Length: 266
Ligand code: HEM
Image (cartoon, rainbow, N blue to C red; front, side, top):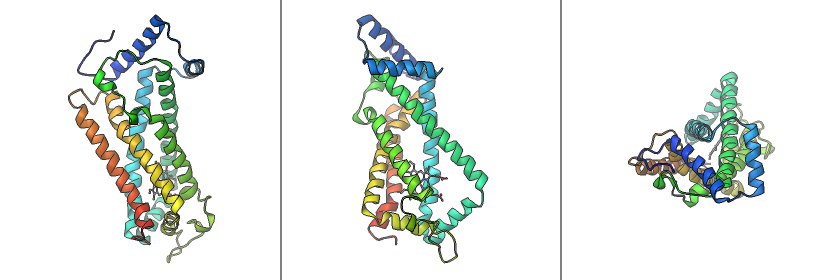
């Protein structure tokens, strides 16, 4: 049995995982065949142990959050009018190498994050919940149990978003590739404004951003715990901080479609 300690870090995550497996073997409880096959598949396709997987998931998640802040700063230039957002977009397109390296890193982080998240979820579901190394750390909430679902909604949102604004293939007539501003530049500002004047599109964004907020509110403090940056004493503060960061990102991002939808930005 793992001992109860105040400092619950990634090491206890490993202990919990081993305990779950051991208890299952002792009690003869067998995971479902589908889960068993999936777990076996994971074992032959990866060398990482459970702790490394959680660290990969947490580390890539934190890198993606850094991207969210950078992306938000660029997007908020929309409130400076068409000059603001179009100048920002034009500036990005003057450094294609930097943009492509950045895109490659973000895509890699995203793929690794999803890959390890699926593995961790399957592994957790192959084991029945048993005694925990650190009970207060293990309290599961609706948000924590829904991480895989909110993550999948965010992934769906992202596909839509990239088709909409980056590849511009969803609404080609109102794409920045077609529209030009007064300086003859691709009119990213008008593309975004026309995009969010569409009710369905705005609702879709709000749903995606809400799922993202739920996902982050658990993901941030969970990642801090994985890296041993939250002790039992500081955990409540970290949980509150994670809620505040997720909430701030939610309100800042949704301010864009909402301002456009209500006509405050035209
Ligand atoms: C209302 C909120 C948002 C707006 C107005 C917005 C706007 C944009 C625009 C205009 C682009 C195209 C940039 C260009 O190619 O010049 C873009 C790209 C992108 N957005 Fe968003 N975005 C929003 C939210 C998000 C969120 C929440 C995520 C992540 C979950 C995200 C991830 C991305 C990614 C990965 C790209 C591709 C970046 C690239 O091609 O370099 N966006 N966004």
